[in-house]
Length: 153
Length: 122
Image (cartoon, rainbow over all chains, first blue to last red; front, top):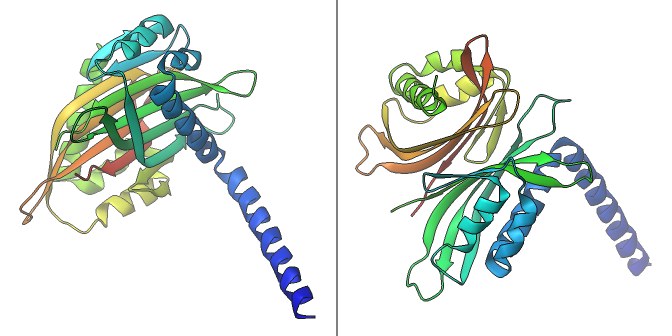
């Protein structure tokens, strides 16, 4: 009898969890997208940097420590040529907001802060980064705008 | 006008209003504007300015270190990415921060549609 009540309560709990997750999803779709994007972006950066090119197109803009770079080819080259082979990003905060009014283009702004550990360096570098994601037909997003700044102590 | 110059002018105007006349920020936001302040989400100019004017300090001074800007798309918006520090009256050490604005053009002037603020802890 006790076991029956326990599993009944557990089912109710899971059901409520699911409903509240769905409600949250409808309200803040951009949070889910932002979270998934951030995981994907930094995973690629740290493990397969040349594949970052799949996230940009010819209209993409990157400002990297004040340097402006246009288009997927130049952006990919810049990221590949950064003066370190191995690195690991650790993300502290992710904030997101829709970039247009409801019914607009569906863009999402993502604001990230974290730290970057370069292989062989004693101390990680702190950074902030802004992305503006634009949806494409297949349901995914590309990076139209990106700005990166180190945060010096 | 050169977009970098527009961004710089906006940033100067925003922070001097914040530092000298915080309620005056209400003219820089509209009803659909969104602010995320240290993770807290606030919508609409009234609520945003209520939040900013209720921050637990009276006097402050923003010192801007970097300003980056990019056009946000065909509708003429502009993304502005700022880093700097914030000195509170009576505090020994300044707080470092980063902030992102998405400015939308409205009849010749810009207003803040998106605003995200984060302190940068060491």
